[in-house]
Image (cartoon, rainbow, N blue to C red; front, top):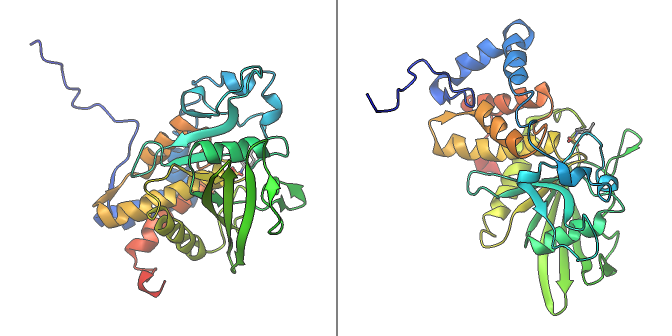
Length: 306
Ligand SMILES: CCc1ccc(NS(=O)(=O)O)cc1
């Protein structure tokens, strides 16, 4: 009688495992009646993580460092910059560590840098030994500035802080994304950083076709797997939650599809939202994660062609 009583009928509120053999049926059920069940499931995620503190984000010294007043960084998972003694809030950047399939800090999700946080962004790149930056928004979208142009326009070296020099060595524009190679130098040490900039993803939405995004995510994963000895991959969009969370979801699901017999999309988004607010911001993005697995099940993508 002293053993813990197992709640046989307890419902695990944090996951909804779907066996891949059942996925088409489950997906069709969720989509019925104008995706009524998708809406209900997405609503269950609404408050997840929101009881956590964001005190650093709210410090008066840091308020100007947040692009959006309602997108703040949870204290528990925030990335801390090396503080400078005399500046309160000098360790702050609106960025959180996000788990991937391979480590608890595989990614850093952050907002699109502001003019006033561009140097903090590159300091974070250096301090975290980041090899890859994934940019998922354009500098201007529908006439609104969504992200600072935080990288050089040409190959002239730029100072991005008192002791960091940045050079763009290469820029290659493809139909759906641009690749840029940077060299970031501090003193006598230089590091290569590659930026993958996806340029066809509308804010608050999903790309018109998933195939370019699938190819993009696979290309980034291929490159990430070359730098397992380096630090987290930095991902940003404008707020660093909607498109950024969906990208992480794509990366994890493409691996899960190859390595597991099930997926747990609800549980994956739940876990992300415990680390950063609003990760996978819209219902359309949540449905898009399911559409990816459905398309994979239906054999829509022939990766051998890549
Ligand atoms: C209102 C704050 C906000 C702005 C933009 C986004 N979309 S994004 O996270 O995909 O950039 C999400 C939230």
